[in-house]
Structure formats: structure tokens, C-alpha cells
Image (cartoon, rainbow, N blue to C red):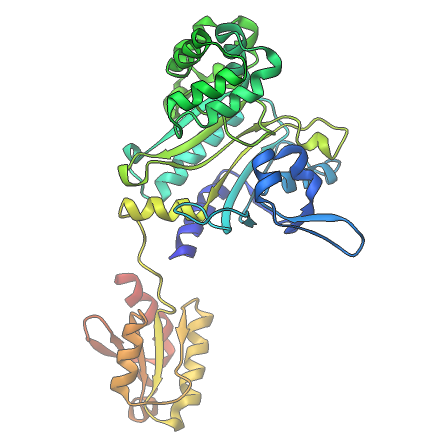
Length: 409
């Protein structure tokens, strides 16, 4: 079931020209301390010290690893680079719905372009991935913001001092999770008076209309502002409340939200990071991407009734009616496997009824029965385990006959 789902997503991603890569599970702790933000660096890292005295961490996310690999290979790569991976990641969190301490996530990134067309391609890809999951358009929403636009709104409209913008980002990141009064108190501790806090509320509830109150310089620097007003704006909802907790995001940020009341939460997200590769290189190589975790993915599929049926272990079982025919059954199984058919053979012969029951229970569609009488004439029996219909098939034609029967079902 899981692999079926992931392979659907891989196929979509690769249609966009993304190449798959992988990287080490251990990285220097300093990578995350410098760029991933306080929550990950101070509370969620699994860290250790090796025999050489180096501080290492199990990767909590993949983007810093990808950035380091891009920096190391920049002289041989042809930009823009489209990469994706499916790593396992580790975070010391309190296990709960949507969060576990080890998970797998699909990471998708584009490196080497500042063009807003990167955003458009990423947003189109997200729509196609959700379509591959058979998710209706009204089951989810892509909410997009821009940290540059938001910083401009905070300084130009709300009156937040430049050196306090990052702290106010932290309040905004909790805007939909904490009581408004508690956030007001926190804002007051940062120096925002009640009038400023009301202006902040107005900005966060204002949607795309806040752009009208921003200076041309702020709007020109924003990839998202370049997309708003074009046909691609239909791909997303502009929402100033999206800010993302990771420290390395520099402009575009986005999250996909489930609209189901039983799972009203962010499924995955990402954004643009202009300075992350520069941590490992003297070259400025911008990037944009997202990570889609397996835990939230399957929560989404479950609440919407979209979880696929588990894939059976095989499609065909070749059954020998007695021990003297096991070698012939194994030879026939090799023929079917060579034709690309997932095939099993019982290790020890048992009564036919028991083997048919076991094969059907394991999800097999067909059984190929090797009997002494049929084998003497170069034939076998092919039985449909759902309908119990069976037919005699020439051994020379068995691979084609089995494939045809599976395709018809």
C-alpha cells in the first residue's frame, strides 16, 4: 500500500524532470544549529560525538544535506538542477497524531534559479501529486506567502522595528494554534502596543489586499507578487499567516492544508532559500523546494477514504500437486517471473485445497496448477481464485495466458 502510493508520486515528480538522489543520514550538528531554527536545533536533534570529537546529528530534514551536495558538485552540475529524494528523518518529538520520531518524506527541490517560474512549476507539481493521490480539489488548499512581503508589511504597516521582525514571525507561526489574548501578551513583550497588535491582526486577515499598501520596492522583490494577477494565481491562496518555522527560508513560503474537519492541519510545506548553499560554498545558488512526510500523507488519505488497498505479495502462485512435480513448478515460476509476473511457489507441497485457500488469502489473483496428467501433455491448469473458473493452457503459452488473464481482471 505504501509503496503503491509512493510510486504514484515518484512517477509524477519524474515527469517534471527531477532526478532522484540520496545522502548520508549523519550530518554535522552545526548545519542545523546555523540554519534550521531553534526548535529543531535545541529540542529535536538526535546528536552524538564520534571518535574524532566531531558533533554529528541524525538528519531531522533533508534540505541542508541537498544544499551541501549541490555546493560540493556545483562545478559539474548544469543549472537549474531538479532533484528529489525519499529519506528517513529523525526528530526528538512527543509522538502524536501527525508526528513521530522517525518518518520518511519525499523532498523535491530546484536549485540555481531566481525566476518566479520555479514557484509556478512547484505549485503545478503539487497539484499533480495531489491528483495522483486522487484527492479532490476541494479536499485541500495550497496557502502561500512571502517572508519578504510579510517583513515589509510588518515594518511599513504595523510599525515593527526591523530587528524585531524575526521574533514577530514566531508569533505569526503560532497564530492559528494559540489564543489571541496570549499572542497579544507575547507581542507586548516584544514592544508592540495594542494599536500595533490590531494592525498586525488586520495584515494577517487581509489576504492579497495588503500588497496595495506596500512600497513598490518590496513588491518588486517578491516572486509571489510576480505571480499574483496572472493565471498561475489560481494554483494557490495568498495567506500572510503562512511563515514557516525553519530559519533558512528567505522569501516564498507555502503549506498544503487538509480541509477535512477531522484532520484540519498542514500536510506539508516548503519555500525558497537563497542563502543555504552559501553556507558550504562561496557561490550564491538559490533553491526552492518542499518536503512531504509519510505520516501526514496517510492521515490525509485515511480521513478522505483514499487509502489504497494493500498490494498482494504476488499475483500468481504455481502449485505442484505432489513432490515429484516441484521442480517443474519452479521452472514454470522462473518463466513467469522472466515475463515480469510476480510469482510464488510453495516451499513444501500440501493439499491443493489448502494451497488455494492460502494463495487467495494472500491476495493472489491466479493459481497455476501443475498436475502429472496435464504435464505429460505439455499443459497446466490456470485457475481464477476469485471466480474459481479454470482453463487448460499450453506451457509454451502460459506466460502470455496468465498476463492476459491478469490484465482482463
